[in-house]
Image 1 (tube, rainbow, N blue to C red):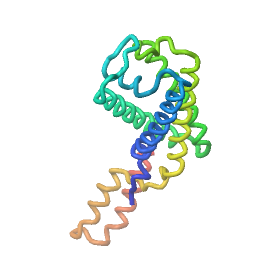
Image 2 (image 1 turned 30 degrees about the vertical axis):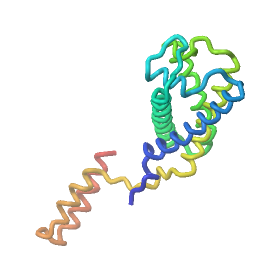
Image 3 (image 1 turned 120 degrees about the vertical axis):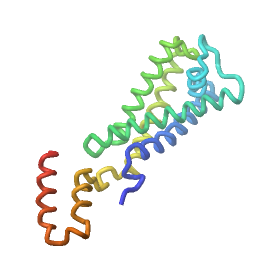
Length: 194
């Protein structure tokens, strides 16, 4: 039986949203104590609204768009991380996530510089450091949740050819004497797929 835990996209998206909330919360906390002069909601809002040259979202609606954009981007990055974790050997998911978070940080800075989003074209070192910390926390948290909830290798995979052959031989008009032909045809088809 298939479960949401067998689907890398669903597990990764959920873990990415939770990781994004962790990242944004940590980043906003650092912003409030003046450890950083920029936070992710400003960046996401600036990307969505097309604000250039250091303009920040001003209204609740603009911050709402920024929050939605941040969660969607976190979800998509989480799905990407789950896909990569599902394709690599088991173990070290938190470390893989932290490295993925570092890639997210450098991507954010590169895109922000290219598009001149919200002061990212010339960020201060303390802002870069706090963003790196929040991005690593995002990746590590997302990797941890993927490790905790994913069951990627446990889903039963059924080839489309199996279903077609099975349907042909499960027809009551054929009868049980043809079951040996079903097994042989299934073996041949599976060997061709490999």
